[in-house]
Image 1 (tube, rainbow, N blue to C red):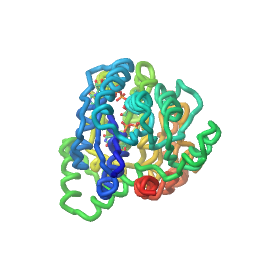
Image 2: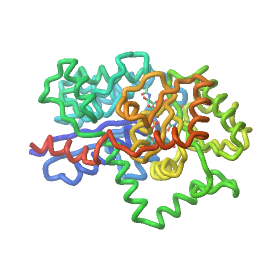
Image 3: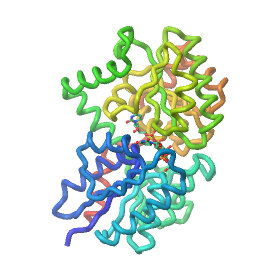
Length: 381
Ligand code: UD1
Ligand code: UDP
């Protein structure tokens, strides 16, 4: 009898990080009966990834509503998953990371006593309000999960401290590195793809004075719920000052579709000449932009994991991080949403070659690109 596996995700980063795992399970279809369920907590940003990796979900809960709150997502996923689990009756449900899709799906599976495998397990800040609500989401998922796939030994230690069974934990690296290597390889070996990526980015920026190869640019992303409101106003003020003080530098910002992000960013930054506000980029194009950027300012979890592999310094607009490995190596710095600190640290990177060289060491604490293979092998045994 083949093992019945259900992989569930709902947002862009979960899709990117689950895509290589889906491919690996599909390669072993004689052992695994795999089905994919998307909650579609995100719609357009999820569909971009599904299209790129050619993933056709077996179930689509299609829950996204504009401006949804945490109750909407949590309750719609919990109820929607009930039907899927009753119909497919999986042996194991795979969830990823720390979104509301993750914790609600884990709870839904638990209510039917179906085993849960948690990918990207064991990340902790210890403060349930930072990042909010993600820290609580991953702790809840950790309580309900039967198998924990930890990206690093730090996350493994966090799980052991919570008395998880040592046998239930496997350190695999982060599946995002599998996705990153797949994308980089594809771009390197396909000049037509590379040309089309460059064209899509330059078309989006639509300024003949900008060139991906020769313009020096800072790449920005941001979306965290705890930064909504004053946090985003502070961030935008900082970006505007950096842009005005450095007219020879370009700032490129693919703006998350959340209306709580779109509104302040468009209101405060759309008239700054050297800031380009663009649509969320397709994954491969975004990776290419990261690789070509001078440095990155972000509050994203995934970007903090990808950038060190590319040797790009990252200023993280958060007060805490559950990813201490790059912080310890000095390639990532926490700047919170303090306008002056963001400006000061960005200016340091722009002015000081020494500071830039120190932060731009390429290193890779988050895996070697074999996480998905290790996870599949764990279940083959
Ligand atoms: C969610 C996750 C967060 C994760 C992030 C990745 C929760 C509570 N939050 O935050 O952990 O880091 O995704 O990006 O699970 N929207 C669209 N189209 C899209 C996607 C979003 O229009 O494709 C808009 C909608 O108005 C939606 C809103 O963004 O209601 C918020 O989406 P939601 O998933 O609730 O929150 P995120 O901030 O994206
Ligand atoms: N990303 C992307 N297009 C963009 C911005 C980001 O494909 O325009 C990718 C990025 O490379 C990373 C992931 O999306 O893999 C991060 O997603 P996000 O910041 O939304 O969520 P988080 O990682 O903070 O949960």
